[in-house]
Length: 360
Picture 1: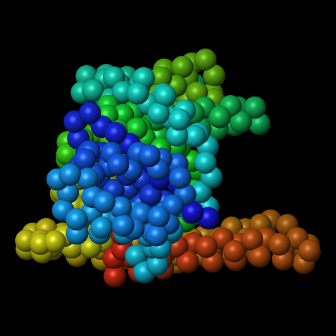
Picture 2: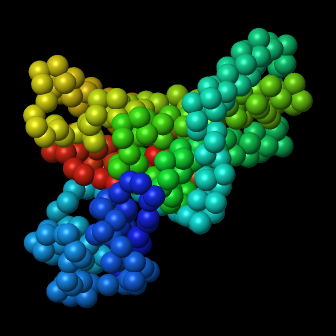
């Protein structure tokens, strides 16, 4: 199914032309003629032969039109493997995210991010000091409420990324859910971040972390009202630590990329990096591959250990085949998915590929 064309204007910077899953950053004079096709499902033949606007080289214009046509037709074979987030499910449409992001953009200023960080620090210090005096009593209601509050912090995290992009004048896309390996994650479509200067990209990278840290701090300050806010705060802190891990394409990965001025860590930049950067990139790829392969070995062992514990608890002779077989099948499917994604990621580290930037 062909995707429609979208043109995103900007008052001072490049305009964006979104065709299928590809975004082109071009001058206003090149993007403005495409406005009349906004939302249309086009093909390469529809765009071929269009006269270039004044001031645009005809050969460059025809190459641009050909690239847009290929993107609209989904002709991306051979351009690399799909991104690590799969089974994508839209949660909040782009129009809602954009409405909220432009109204939250003030929180992504320097003062706003510092203020949210201070709120988070105050909250988690308070939670750490009072944890012993407030023992947690788990129950279905507490667990459900804690997970609900944690989910809100995760959505707030993604709105932080979107708001930071909106601060620079570019509208974000939608927010969705997917699977990273077999772990459920949320992501925000901030593809336009690629046209921002390094400082702007870093702002988008860290804004989600700071937003969730600040929200977690508020929940931590509310821990005296019940167990659920405190549990949600700890879960938010764990999620933040996970997102900062540089071996997955999440916040930490993009922060390292943007600090180094790179678009990705799997491929060497062009021109070739210097000795120090080249050594770092080779070490990163090796450490990442070893980590992923280690995870692929440790997880099956943990699954087997859990299964053995269950069997020992009930007695092997009491475990019926009708109960054991579904467990083994589910575990096998999960391990298969994990190993498929691990090998796919290791393949990226070996041969490299270009993927769309999502921030989780």
